[in-house]
Length: 491
Image (cartoon, rainbow, N blue to C red):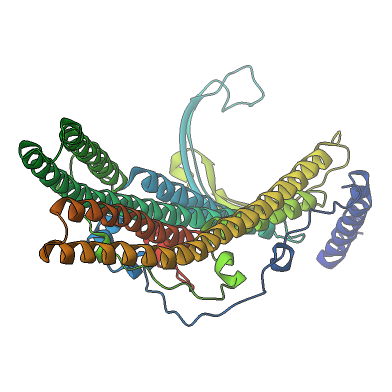
């Protein structure tokens, strides 16, 4: 008679194991309440176009080129900006930060998938005769080896991994926008420095003519003094005006040298690399500004885009921190070979395998997770506040530039009238001199008014060009959507 107790079937054992696992999971879910995230946090409100006085969108008839600075129509300027975007050290730092952020997002993405490893180990060891290992191993030296493959995977039941990945991608996209912002700012700096140098060159041309005029006045006054028509007072005044004009030219030469050095450094070259660069204001053509500039232009401005992506990254950071209050489940498995003695390592009897499911959940953590969630919520509020500030700064910068352009347009009309009047008086003085009704000193004196108006005209044109560059930079590059700067910065 067989007295051996009956063994439970495989199905019965599996059912019992499943029941125990289900009870454990139910108990775990109930215990999650012990680590509560607390009351939900209401983040700050993001600003909207209407809140800053902008229309929702706008369209323009002006087609901006791929690189907005080319609208000025100066090939030399285009070359300098291209050189700056390739060689400026600050832009290289921005590219390095972008590459770092992209790499971190790739690390996060790889960590969220299944992980597989293969390990091969060999050991030669003498086992103590007085330890836990029994004879005949105890007291002897043996070789041992292991060949094992391991697979692990953590299912994302509660969205933690997805939130972490989206947060990392948001930071990478923000870094990309930062690189574009750096390129946009650098292009504007080079353009504005180029316009400033062109202004100095134009002012020197006017100052050179002023020196020639004062030389003529001195010579003519000296002749009139010798003839008894003028006194020593007039002659001394005429002589003093010559070195004064030369001083102005010398000061302009100094400023031109410094401007060239600054331009060279901005383009990533040695300070003395551009000794002959002589831009002409006449070669720079100010582009017409559309009457309507929509909020979509400010929305693509790189620093605003970067701030917006940081808000997205911070939002996902909050979601990730909240998901840590839920169970963390990990499924692992291994299969391999292990033996004491390398000669038996690859025998079928040396195989080993197993599964290692694991569940971790917070119960009592001293408020650590709640504090961490509060920190992420504060980061979100900070990111939203920075985004709102970036939008307000962009609106102000663009609005100031538009207001200046409108004022300069009105000033230009008045300046044109003043130049026309000065040139008309100069022509009348020349005609009177040719007709023998006046002396040449009157002609030269009248020309002084023309030269004064030319100086003002040079300054006004330079300001018009500079203000347009400021507006282009404030709008993220030109009047229409243009992502060429971003692609250039990301190379």
